[in-house]
Length: 567
Image 1 (cartoon, rainbow, N blue to C red):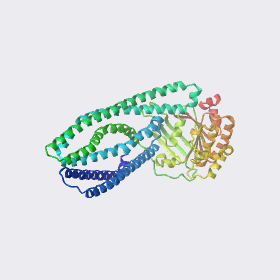
Image 2: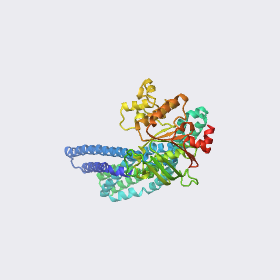
Image 3: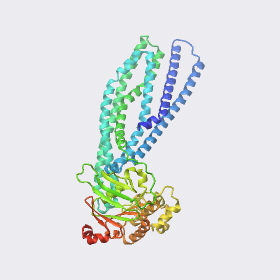
Image 4: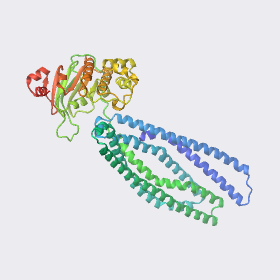
C-alpha cells in the first residue's frame, strides 16, 4: 500500500505545487485589495484599470491552478486505489490454502469491499484535504506574521483545548469503528451462509432462525453505527463552537491593533479575509485525527492480509516430463502432515506409497482417514511436515508450483462452476482454448448433445456454482474441463457419488475415455468403482494399512474385505 502511494508520488507532488501556487495567488490578490483600500481611506486616487488588470490575471491563473490541483489530486487518488486493489487482489490469490480454511468468506469480502472503500476515502478525501489545509495554514500564517506576529500568537493560543477534545473523540471513534467492522464481518458471514444454504434452510424451515441470527448481528452493527454517528456529530458541533471563540478573540485583537495604529485598516481587512481562509482548515487539521484513526482500523485489517506469507513459488522445474517408464509418477516416503502443529495426532502419519505412470491407483477407507488430504498435498495446497514427495522423479520442492499443478486434472464430487457460460467454464481448463476444442472436450464428456438442446447453447449461463444445471450435468462439464486441460495425472474424487443411475452411466463412459493412457488416482467410497484399479491402498488413521489389487485384498480377508462385504 505504501509502495502504491510512493510510486504515484509525482501526482501528489503536483497537487502540492498547484496548492501552493493557488494560495500564493490568493494572498497576492488579497494584498492588492488591501493596498487599494488603504489608498482610498487615505484620500489617494486609485487607477481602476491598473488595479483590475493584475487582479483579472490573478483570477485566471488562480482558476487554472485550482483546476490542475483538482485534476492531479483526483488522478492520484484514482491510481493509488487502483494499484492497492490490484496489489491486494494479486496477493490474496497467492495466499496459501490454509488461509482460506481459517478465514470466513464474509470476513475476506468485508475487507475487500468495506475496508478498501474506507482506504479509498483516505486517498480521495482525507489525504488531499489534509495536505491542502496544511498548505493553506502554513502559507497564510507566514503572511499574517508579516502583518503582525501577535495576531498569530493570539490565534494559535486559542486552539489547545481543541486538540484535547479531538484526541479523546478520535480514540473513542477508533474503538467503535473496530467493533463496527467486526459486526460487518459477522453480518456478511450470516448473509453468505444463508444464501449458500438456501436449499437446506428452506427444506428444514430455518428461515425464522436465520432471520433472527441476521437481525441480531444487524442490530449490533446499527448500535455501533449510531454510537459512531453520535460521537462524530458531537465532534462536529464542538469543532464549530470551539473555532468560534478564536475568531471573536482575533477580530477584537485586530481591531485593537488597528486602533493603536500598529496595522492599517487595509491590513486589518486583509487579516480578516485570511483568518476566514485558515480558520476552518485549522479545525479540520485538528479533527482530522478522527478520520485517520477510523481509516487506521481498516488499514490494519487490510495489512493483516498483506502480512500473510504467500505460498512458495517452488523450484526451477517448469516442464512436464517426457515419457520415461523407469520413473514413477508419484512417490511418497514417510510423509507426515498436520493441519495445525498443535494437533496431537497427525492427519497423515508416515505414509508411503508408489504410483506408476499410466496405471490406475485407488485410495479407500472410512471418512476422516486422510484420503482427501492426500489430494491436497499432491497438488501442493499444503506442505508436508516431514517425509519425501517426488513427482515424476523430482522432489516436489524442486518443481515450480504452477508447473507442478499443471500436471494434475481433478474431477471431484463437489463440482465448482463459475457463474459464467458453459463455454467459459469448460475453457478455463486451457488458456486460449478455441471453441472447437471446447466442443470436442464436451463431446468426449457426453455433454455436447445436452448443450446443443439449450436455447443459448454453449453461451448458456450456468448460474452461481452451476445451480441451473443438474448434478450430473455439472459433473460432465467438469470432466470436459479436465479433458481440455489434458494433464498427465487425473485425480478422481468419487465423481459418481452424488448422481442418479442414468447420469452415472454417462459420467462413467466419459471417465473411461479421459482415463485412457493417463495416470489415474481415485478416492473411492463405492468399492465397486475401483475393482479395475491396478493397485489399491487402504488408508486408516493416516497410514497405509493394506496394499494390493481387488482380488488380492479380498482374499486377504482384512479391512478391505470387510468393507467390500458391507457393500
